Image 1 (cartoon, rainbow, N blue to C red):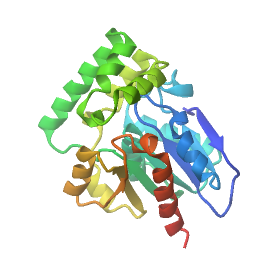
Image 2: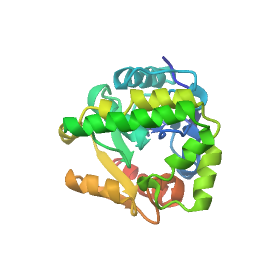
Image 3: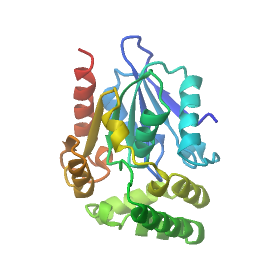
Image 4: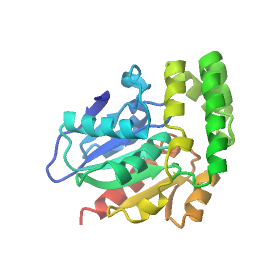
Length: 257
């Protein structure tokens, strides 16, 4: 299955393509403020199943989604590339890098993404948690569910105005498609990838907003270096695209020399 994607910039033999994966409820468009600050790089932003231009696509889980990413990269003639993902997109990027990426993958940047749960009880709790949210998306008015979604603790830093802007931006989603994607790619269905990541023979960077305590603590507990994005919470690339782009460019340039 080839996913909808948006190509930007000119192909350059001396630079890898930046491949972007958005979070749940988002789309390829979410990355535009950051992408515009990295105009010297060829870029491909992918709409994940159930989202944006891939809204009609359904996915059975991480394996089929990772295969679809490979098919999409092949369709767009992507050779060497860096994979950059936020939240759900970050988890997909982690899985893809560990299980399905070929030698074309040059590096990985994840923002506010979980490595996976080891504990069976935590997995069961997360499965039930995501099933409840999926039911909310399927049965309640979308604006009402989105309002509740963006009041979760991980989004506590959002102002009322920022929350309203996110709800307005996400109201074009199809609730049933979001519910299906939420359950198919639930954290409860994701393998714990930490051991594999530590053995991955590619550069990995972990970004998160400086006020995103949950994911900064997660990185600390995993003994992984975390690059904080100043003046930002969980959705750091949206809250501070200039700083995000600058730190990403610094990371990319460090690998060019």
